[in-house]
Length: 454
Image (cartoon, rainbow, N blue to C red):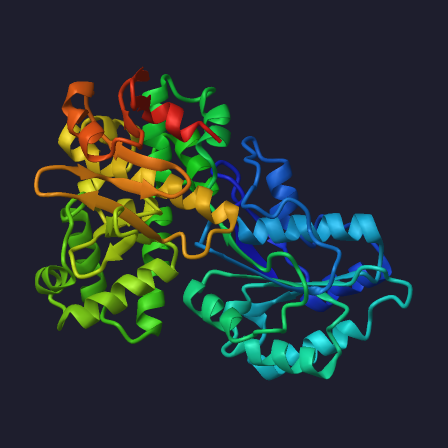
């Protein structure tokens, strides 16, 4: 079948995509070249800008089981999957590795039949057996097929690697498979944004300053495709914006939620950025029925790996105070860009913002980075964060792993934080802003240095 694939911003071209059965025939018999079969991976290798992919899965396990990898659209999951198919085939040879595409499978019964058919085709001498399934979340009730096959014993010697963009379905489906994921040390992964450090190494050839690089990274949300486009063209094209909006709105439409409410909700979250806000207020400002509706919309944005909820935290009692208003951070900054927050599409647009306007974007990118680091570590539910607030003072983030963090968009005066030593005599505070310096327990760090730590 002929399909249009946008491989890079300068050379969009038509590629022949083989039928899945033809791909598996080549993987079984070892005939022909894999390059025309897996165009995304080989296209990436020949691209002018090639970003490394790192989300915590350093090497593919050889043991059988189930790997579930959730991620946002256009962050490179399918490309990564194709690369792993190539590596697996090259390492273990024909008859050890197969592939399925969830977008081309009608239902969970067909999925069950396809997996069973492939299992029977593995080489009798194969020491490692793997089936890679892209976009498994496109198949309704996909977990039923995995459950039946595991219980029957047919897949207990097979590693099944799945990816999906319908993060809500994939997470809940995986949770419905207790005891059927093998004995892998870790079976759930989040496909994280590109790190700033890897982005910056390429950006130095295209951008004039560290400030420009930070602005471009914020606008891209760490999406490799968007990063590449920004660096080579200087702006985010309309088709990328529409792609993100279609992904978000389509996910909500599938859940039976009104398009207008989604747009209004995201607009409200942009306007209330940096401020603790009750769900009741969000409902009132967004036109939602009540705070229960707000909670459902928030949960879906969190499941789509777009949003984090920071609850008011009491360090003395070591617990969240869920009765108090929470703060909501976009952990995929491409989403507020796509929905028109501050009408940004280029580095020049971002640099034209006032210091106050930039403040929310800096806080969001810090939240995105904290989320990314926790996701790579395998922290359960990294979308739940903490902040602290008294009647007079506030700390933006209280991270068990990163410590106490405050974000500032302008110059930093350490004397503004004398209160911290009295309130938290045993703790240290990292203030992320425009400078790097240490003042006792107050460690000032530039946003560039913070993002470039890992």
